[in-house]
Length: 310
Ligand code: CP
Image (spheres, rainbow, N blue to C red):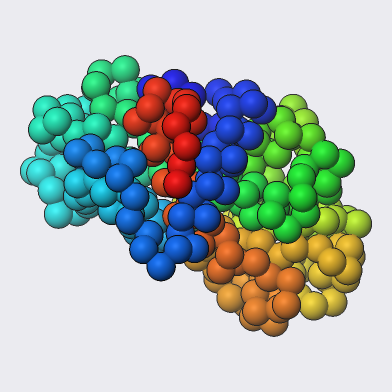
């Protein structure tokens, strides 16, 4: 791992495996009654979010606090961004206060990549536009590894709003590097051209994408990013592309049901699928804290796990 974590496109299979191993150790720590560790003692972590978040932002903050860091957060809506301050000036200001790690979410694809070379702090991409959400894919991969034992030959179907999803891109980069076979499925208007070039199979029917899948991952219909006319209505979307108990039968009987959240119940997944016995959506959330602890710990040590995590 380098100074920053900007995406999984730039990481090797070995680097991804190292983060997953560190996250497994962090998960052990999280299972203890006393979750406090000294791994980031004296370090400062700031989360800077230009878009809303529940899971990512809180889990980074908790991860930093569990590792004894000084943790603070800023929302664009409550900061001097509202007075016209640029992203670069905002991040340089946070950097100038001696911050070690800046976790940022921005609506513009590539925003963290532009910022990273200009600051001393490590930048962690917590989601940039429609580009990548690397820690989400890492927590998804940790969950799959725990449940399925590995990735080689595993069939993963990612379904829904492929066009606007940063989660799908990070998962494709990570899962294919570790040997999984990835299919994407959704309406033609929500699957961008050229997805095949990322090494995945493309379907415009969710049933076909799910055939014999070991993992069914739904994606949120990102209503806030839609141009008009991509599908007639959310009701119609669910009718033709939503996953319910009947459609889930196209996957293997023991297929995992995953979703990065937040879920639009009754749109991409029916409530019965969200809450079914094979759903690991809440375990994904739990693993998010472990992954974010691992990432920040490794960044603080120059990317190495060269000290026992206990
Ligand atoms: N999965 C995800 O990024 O959720 P939040 O938007 O709540 O952080």
